[in-house]
Image (cartoon, rainbow, N blue to C red):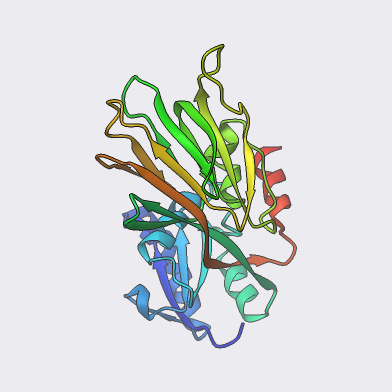
Length: 266
């Protein structure tokens, strides 16, 4: 696997996990890899703890474009981003040395709030009401007004994120080889007076989605960026589009996205 040899491990520091990781640390160092203390010095970032920890690792290392990300689960965890298990640490290293892995590139979405601050997401961005009141948003696609949404909120997911929050709200699972965004409603209000599309819809990689929040007292909506939530005052617009960034991860050659979907859900 070329000359990538500096490893940074991202994990929750607890005694049990540190004990489990000790044999892995010793083994990777015996095979010529170096464990570094700072993520900026690594060319491979390894998360331990399932998909949630993987998302945190990517976010806290600033969606780096010059490294590979690897996900490792513990015994009782499932992971769509994680191809390896901590109890099989020798297989992890052997796969890296013997080139039995492939690099895959996952799309990222850019979320710009009020035309100022831009955030990245690997899974999804969500905006929802923080109070017992519907949130109202005008939805624009490429500056063309599409609908006025009323409901609990909206989710905008990447293809890899389509298996998460999006799927739990009846969104479709999308192959990550299709660069796109999926927009899914949260409890939309539909009656003789108010109307939304009432289903998920998919936008191609060149589309720009803009959400304009109607200021009607719902001034503190919750914005979810992957598995972190922010309460931001006076959100007026969110502009969402596919980023030029791609997160490079590794997978076993015999473990496709659909293999993992089948193993996780069926």
